[in-house]
Image (cartoon, rainbow, N blue to C red):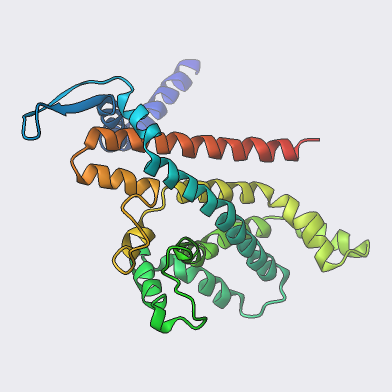
Length: 290
């Protein structure tokens, strides 16, 4: 009997390995290997003799990374995105949480309609959404008499587009977390005289804290990777340069055939994203401690 069970486990492992093999092969071929190759190329520099000499590549160690950290435009783009994230991410998550709480509380009629309405902007392709908002931002259509495409306002105009696009997506994550809470907790709180506001503040929000952290990490990643909206708006305003965001810096470098430098920029951006995401997780875990 023991031998049969052992043979059965081996067959199951073999079957599982067979099902996983195609995914693992494609994952390694189209994800792991390109990342590894880009990381390898980031340590090479291109040099040429004279303005029109033949380009040659040689191992440059961390030269590209040092160059990136000394690039004032790249550093400024990261600082710009940090400012963007400090303002835009809390506003977006607060709106997402508010909408989720309203839908979960049952004070809103036609829940399915509002869930679809909140989520609909996320279903619009980013390029289409940016083009639409770029048209609405035209000075001739501005209802407040402010140039929303000017250098002083363009960052927050982009923030408005991102908030419009992703609030509904985050709302669905938070709403799903709220739906998973045991309703008996609410009944017990009401029997103790708790109001709807206290139930939301003392029970619902603390219990959806992991979902809030998850959406926060996703938002940090998206902030530092911001590309589509500023790239599209570049066609309608001169306030956005080719180095406005970190991703645009890397894209511009790659477009000028500085592939090794672009790879270094990309890995520095990935490192910054990882550090900020890890810092958020550590901060929230410490805050959740006894």
